[in-house]
Amino acid sequence: MTEDRAKQLIREAADIMTAYPVETERLYLRLFTPDDLEDFFEYISQKELQRLSGNPEINTRKEARESLEWLIGQNRICPTRFAIVLRGTGKVIGNFCINFYPFLLHDPALEGKKGLSLSFVLNENYQRRGLMSELLKRIIDYFLKEHGFDFINAGYFDFNEGSKRLQEKAGMHPYIEHTFEHNGETLNVKEMMICREDLQ
Image (tube, rainbow, N blue to C red):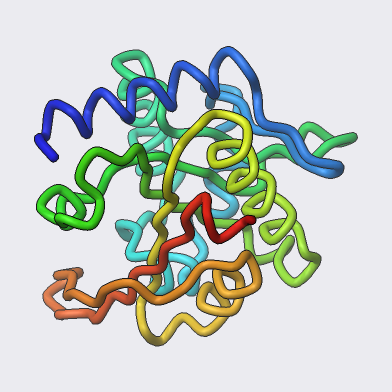
């Protein structure tokens, strides 16, 4: 698969998510706005969340504002970074992103197939309520059953047992391992995959 084709898939998925917003019983996704700063800062500055996700270290509202402004600017180019919003309150409790990771480009098993990579984080204060399980299951059905994609990929650092269990519960299976450089450390990443045929 070429990089141009991967970019085309990301754009197609972004257009779909913009036209047909993702909703679950307790959550919905939307694009970020500057008004989300306080909610964004609340979770993006959580140290354990930074460690488990590999996010940059953010300690101040100024740093959070700069990160949020960058994120909103990237969404103007292609809307791929979505706020996870709690129904009833309108509170932003995390973010959900679509991408296509480079290691998939040269995988012959995926040649000619449509797929996406996902990444997501959830405010620590809203974990262990089944919210991310609810959202991930919906996203898998959304792309694989409703919009004709062939596979969904996501990964986790090998020390992130919570993300491992989440992805396994969603029906994802181990696919490949690789390393990721973060803050001077080499971290081991375990990638997971689920295909449309896995849902049948």
